Image 1: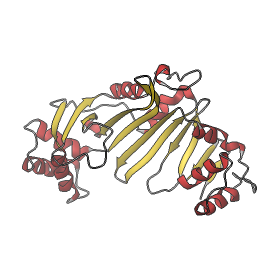
Image 2: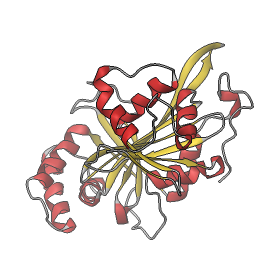
Image 3: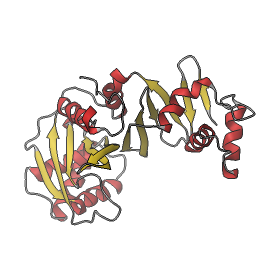
Image 4: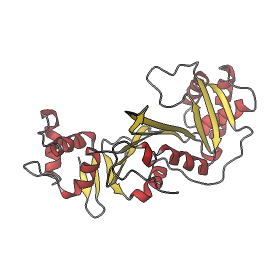
Length: 284
């Protein structure tokens, strides 16, 4: 069920509710399969009897109708994959937060100057003490990673140290890298809090012609072992592209370096197409 908090201009909406708003904003009647979602929006007063949109929806509707930049964030952890994102329009920025197991996401307007902070929040970027690894690169294959995950899945709830021992055995049997990378890789998998990837998409130019531009970053958050950028397989990954023989390359990075890479995902003013006034990314 959708809901809103007028004091903070927060909205909780499912994709079907957003679809209804899109039709109404375009002056269209939502199709029959969205009738229930329309009724729910009318029930709480976000949509009037004749399809009028509440003023609370202004930033969301205007921004979604003409987005300049779309930022997609997918975080995969204990509860599976959860989607978040940021939509940057001409006059507003709208952030949406998903929640594990919930149909609705929270939508809220954000100050453009806080864009990077919002992006860092969505991936839970944080500083803190971490263990210095014996090596700062690990190169193996996706098949070896699968073997480590299988080993951990067969013994759920074990301590990290025991999980690392079991993963180490599975990695060795699957033909993992030589020591010390082998033990480190097993430790990384056992300590893995989550993996996340951020993809930014906007209208740019290629060879002088309009084209969709894309940048992406994939990171492992390994708790006390820090952050590791996944260089291979390289984003974006297409369906069927990754096989057990595909290379898996991880490189150690600090939280400050992750911040810099998140900054680099955002387009500069000259990168954007048909964007009056351009888009100036906030300075960290």
